[in-house]
Image 1: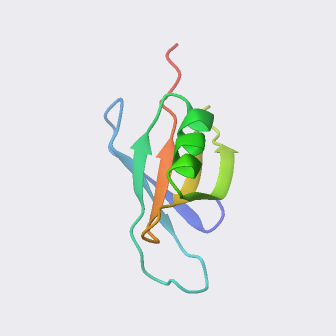
Image 2: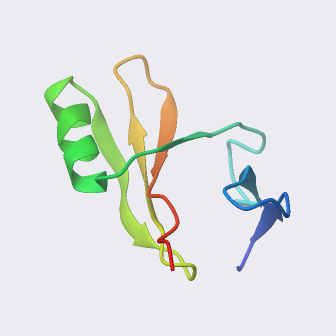
Length: 86
């Protein structure tokens, strides 16, 4: 996954995470991922509340999608769709 490494608990439904090496500041940071059923609706709510999308929806190999947003206090928060059931 390029400079990122996946952290998997081995338990269905998580928790999971990522370790990233950006190669530029911020060198160390924490990003909280919040699961949402409808990513576009969540991004719309963030915008309505005064936040903004930093990384638009990105598809993951497992079928989920994520996006990063910036809240009005400057925090980066990630939104993640759930795993699709078989």
